[in-house]
Length: 143
Image 1 (cartoon, rainbow, N blue to C red):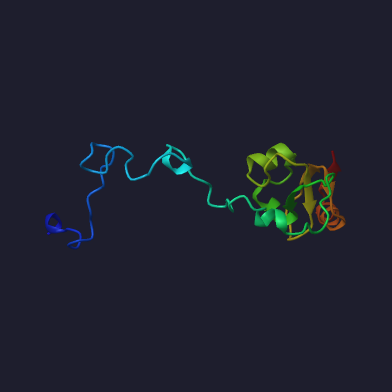
Image 2 (cartoon, rainbow, N blue to C red):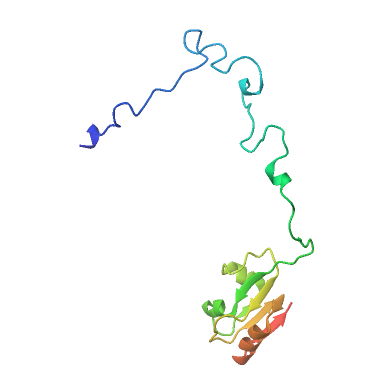
């Protein structure tokens, strides 16, 4: 049965072989003479607008981008449930667990509940995160 499968008649065409002599699109291979599109690798990018100012440059700039902005890797208190009781958590342990990327400083937020006593070392803590960690007998230490 499978050996009789074939595409519908007329749906598959042979590839046009160009540049193989004068009888079959030879010489310039259907590209005409000279110019950007006749060369190999030639042509313009899809977003090229013929030399006029591109749309992305014509549109006005909006807003303000702070060059000194600090981005943090965020960890919620509820995400720390996978660790063992009494563990010391540093950004390195959080990276190994896949909770942070390890490229940015770590901030611990207070979303979720925690049932463990943990010591967490991070660069920043929210007030609610500190409250939830210390409520269980753990510590929140700023690096």
